[in-house]
Image (spheres, one colour):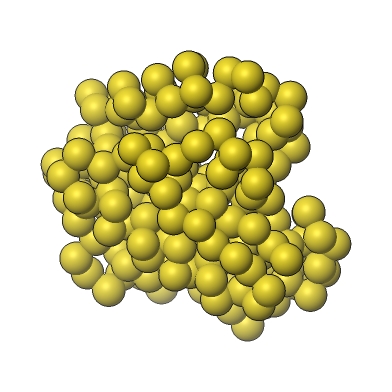
Length: 185
């Protein structure tokens, strides 16, 4: 069984809405169990349990939230070598476009790499002008179908990669399914 954790911090509810769409996308991969956890309810055992992890944070001055940083600094420190080699990705929302969401994703990815996670971006397009190179990003809540589709695509890609890497399920390899890939235009 493929195990995906979608872990998020959300001050206004916008990142929580993204997390739900990401969880929905991950659940589309067969034989995948998905846990959706806010920081307030998450336990280190949730992170140890998963094969793949999506981490989301509101954008705070172009970086991850202090609550998310504190969780990894203080709560996850004892789990250091127990989570090395897992697959992970990031997502973030901000008050408006240009608010630093991609920088927040990069700060999340950097933090995850320091714990030994294998992180990824997505090269194919979620919509005509919407990519997920650093993760899913949105201004405020994911209102549009394109923003929601981007979140679902990130969740699905996480579940596909963890199925391939953790369970050897080559049939879920996203690059070997060209009919699902989108190009700009």
